[in-house]
Length: 126
Image 1 (cartoon, rainbow, N blue to C red):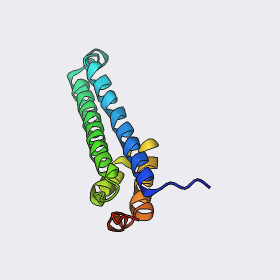
Image 2: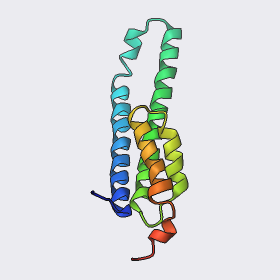
Image 3: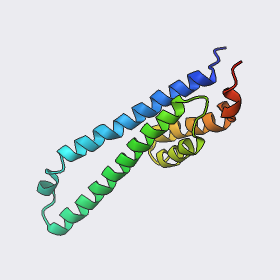
């Protein structure tokens, strides 16, 4: 059976986190490009204000997801001493982004608690 090393898991996790961070970045850009058309869809000022608030919350959530994914990816690439708190924080934040965020969060938690539970032990050369 094919067995991955801790370093290979770290690389897979790091690249997956970068990919997960790029997707919301493009979505924020797409939402920014179409924000002006929001005023054409919503006729009254109250509905426009509500639409802008929803759009701002969505954009803010996407930005938080993207930034946390990029920071978590940098910690995952350092397989000898990953900053576990950052990875766990990313898992909590991205868990709400169903379905890819949920799957990636579960893989992050699996990596932190099962695959690389003691990074200090992995730092010792074999």
